[in-house]
Image (tube, rainbow, N blue to C red; front, side, top):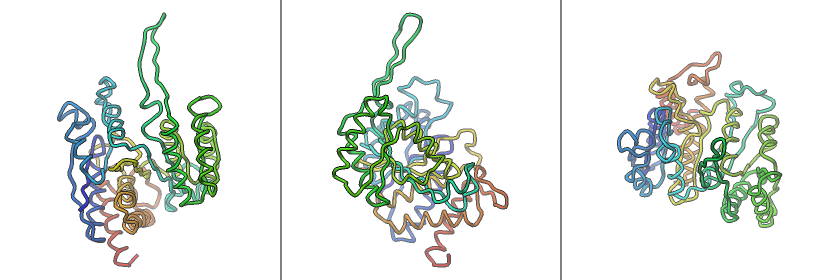
Length: 362
């Protein structure tokens, strides 16, 4: 039996997470998998219930589970709180740190049916298939932060810190990922300016000697941002530090037609966490408009990485592709000639496509 911690979170989280659970339940029956789901509050929802964005009970549930599925965290309602109590800083980042989740995997794959959904030219994006490996527990997000008074005002300080061992473990994971794909790895840094990036590049070059079959290319982050939208097919696996990865993966969502298509897996510890790359979108919460596909695809990554069930993971991906090919869309993906569905209805369509795939009728 696989124990899954379910953390809906805030905004559209309580709408999209049930659709991923719905799809996992369907996989349970189709592939003979046994899941139990236990829900717990996190983020702003947990502040309202307990006064803290990451209650001890929620953290204990996560530690005792086999995998975690998370919706989204945060929103304007809690933006007035001090940093140490805000949902993003006091729930998501500590959750990653406490569980040892040092690597975030974000596949950037364009479904053929969404070629027209991207603002970029079809000939530029067709065939895009990138895996971004983002370091998740170091860098500016976890370095010392402080403010101090200076003559004439205030000074804010955020410290960017990386150790060679932190870089090595994420680098090794990226090299292994490249070995299972096209054997090409782009390491993204800012070594012309930052000392942390110079160390990053040195460690990557040392690691490359252990992976002589992998071609390693270095690229400055500003150039990488341009190249992602100019010539995305040059990339296969990208590895980069925390903040660069955060920015570049959101940018890469343009290649897929919507950030609502971008799944992610945070791995490295004993319990992995799966979540969509997008935010809580409070402006469309409780309106049955949110796109659940990134969360459903994140559940597919769970089946692949946590439960080692490649067949079920591929079935989810194929079911999503079929639903899109049949012309079903949520509002932000709507195109002429397509049929608009709500959040729950889109989840239903994916389940139907799964059943047909298993029956061999697709």
